Length: 404
Image (cartoon, rainbow, N blue to C red; front, side):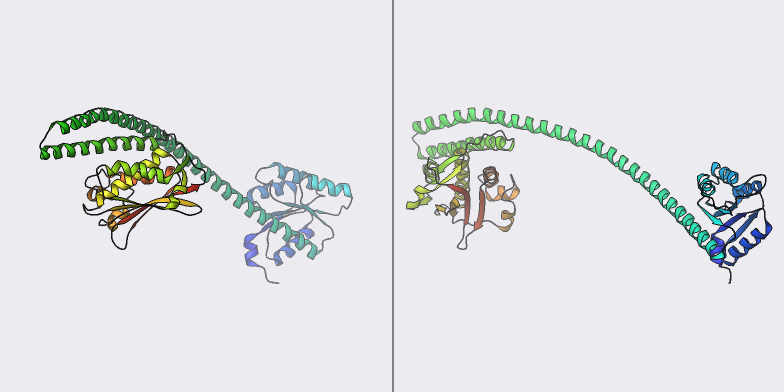
């Protein structure tokens, strides 16, 4: 049988026996199988060779002069360099206590004399493969430990970075919160400071309107009064908007009549603008929704105001109620130019340039504020252009059967 060159390079076995014929026999058997061989005839030589050559396996005779196999094996297992080398005893002893002593001193197996070549090679190959597998597992474990250590360091570094980032984020959030509080306080203060002089201006314009006789002067005074009322309304809406965004507004939900709400709000506008038409329906009296009266009226005022700004002087704004088993709402339609594609993209954005362009007499907060209020009420807002021209705004609420 030709020697296996790959196995020769891979494995090396130390044979320890004081009988030359045994060394020759074992060497020949291993050589034929392509396994490298180291020889020692005594315990001292065996220990020295094992330390410097580090064989993959040791075949160790027990019955040797000066230092027997048990002592040799004990010395091998006591040395950190050689303790992991597997040892197979070569022995003619078959007594259980001898075999047990062999395992207690650190051997992994034993082979009885006289030797059987097939059995010998089977045991040698098994322990060489186990040795190789153990070495591979140790290498894998070492790599895994290194990888785990590396990943642990990375995780620790990432956690530290996250901790620092969270602290910065917390500080930024705290600063933002304080800024929001300061902004809310500022808006409330400004609203208060604006309302007082505006109410005074409004009162003086009413007095002037009664005093002056010139129609042209009365028209100027009425225009001033109209602008003052718009500023007052803006102040009220901005304050309400701030309260909602800061979650300071106490929502009072109760069953409300849509018809009564529409009548109340329309009456405010009809004093100055006759273009509003309400389409009545006998079923309107039975339409109730669960909402907040102030928020509902504010939404309707903003939608009507928005429609009137779009509508030409000879145009009209139509208001209609609608309902089914689950939903009820208010439709406000105008016959103005409708919304451009660009305007539709930013209808719900506060103070957008497009809002300011298309609502030249407003402040760019109308429909955006309506959307925020309806979201707070868990209601819905739909805005569409009409095929015949103009636009329609629909506010939808969950219905309730309980009357006010």
